[in-house]
Image 1: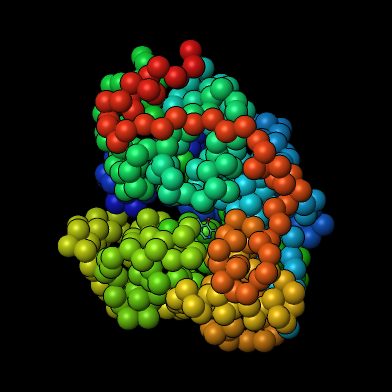
Image 2 (image 1 turned 30 degrees about the vertical axis):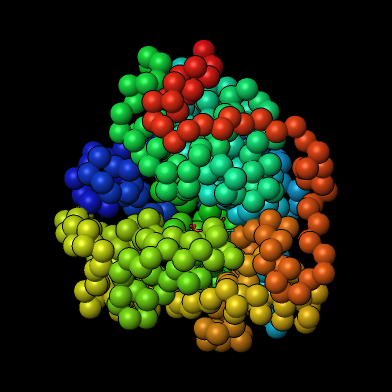
Amino acid sequence: MKYISTRGDAPALSFEDVVLTGLANDGGLYLPETLPKFSAEEIASWRGLDYRELAFKIISPFVDGEIPDADLKKLIESAYSKFRHDAIAPLVQTGHNEFILELFQGPTLAFKDFALQFLGHLFDYVLKKRNQKVVVMGATSGDTGSAAIEGCRDCENIDIFILHPNKRVSDVQRRQMTTVLTDNVHNIALEGNFDDCQNMVKASFADQSFLPDGRQLVAVNSINWARIMAQIVYYFYAGLALGSPARPVSFSVPTGNFGDIFAGYLAKQMGLPIDQLIIATNSNDILHRCISNNDHSKQPLVHSISPSMDIMVSSNFERMLFDLYDRDGAAIKQLMEDFKSGEMSLAEGPLSKARELFSSYRLDDKETVDVIREVFENTEYLLDPHTAIGVQAARKQRKSKDVPMVCLATAHPAKFPEAVRQAGQAADPALPLHMRDLFDREERYTVLENDLAKVHAHMAANINA
Ligand SMILES: *Cc1c(COP(=O)(O)O)cnc(C)c1O
């Protein structure tokens, strides 16, 4: 299987190379040249498989023999060994034919664990084989940093440096990162805001001469192909549990960078009978505006109570555009050139295709809080603010009561106590048992000035030999 860039001008890569690559060198994002397709008979034959067995069926055609089957099975086994629930992605019912897919049973309580637990093990496997060591560097405003750290904590060939804005992430989020004490994990609290952290990371990727000889930086951000790939699995898992392929299913997805819902689109292309795919956004609604009004324009960032969806531009949407424009790399290159102005509109054909594939809905903070309250009153099930947006979008956009609607629960409510309090809960939601002692654990992190040379000196001095 070869991987190609959405802008058509970068070399095609093998699976292992694409795992270690971020952006393509033409500025595009990598995608498989062809998608594996599964027949209804084949999907039906997977009904009895547990999550890991199903993951192997879905991931192996993308790996296409580059990793021997036995090794790939072991990687998948380790990736999902730290999930607290035997089902890995359990379903809970919240209404007539309405289900919540709990994607927060991983070590950091957010769905990003599905991709990053797998990616950490995959990195380590490929690096060992190549006898290579790398430095993972990333900036975080919350969820991604802790999920990346948990994914890489036991990887021998990786040093991971995660920058967060000092004093500007929640205590739970900071402690999830800083209480991981393995010696390849390096937390930096930068004296600045999230943009300063991101700029620091960008500048470091652009000039890596501060690294020891033979080391390179690797990104774990949401454009990594392997992250998307790992997320396809739970769409099939939920579909099979609810009667697919004999019965269609719909999904509502709290959306930021479009990685999660793009995996749902791929599941559909691969043969899962998905009826509706609903893009649910907070006030940062570029995708909702694009689908409803053909208005794909950058607007100022709004800080919402669903912070993991606070984006101005959805980085993975380019992958979707590539398919909407019949995989015409030159057209995407032009479109992205246009978008440098801060806005673009889709041509008629691609727009109508997008509208056939997706519905969309947007909620502001007040509406989000109202949904948390209402669902709790009716079911005693407590939603986190991201999931609440998905649930309400599903209720507003649903076309058929016959088709099961699956709302992806992307985070555990204990991660966002402020929103839950606003929804009228007297007590903060309890952390799951394995994290109850989070506030007693030892923390380790370094506060650094917002100064490139100082950050680089710190990194160079702390990379393990
Ligand atoms: C990252 C994240 C999202 C958005 O997912 P995308 O793949 O970026 O669309 C939604 N909810 C939570 C809790 C997240 O951490």
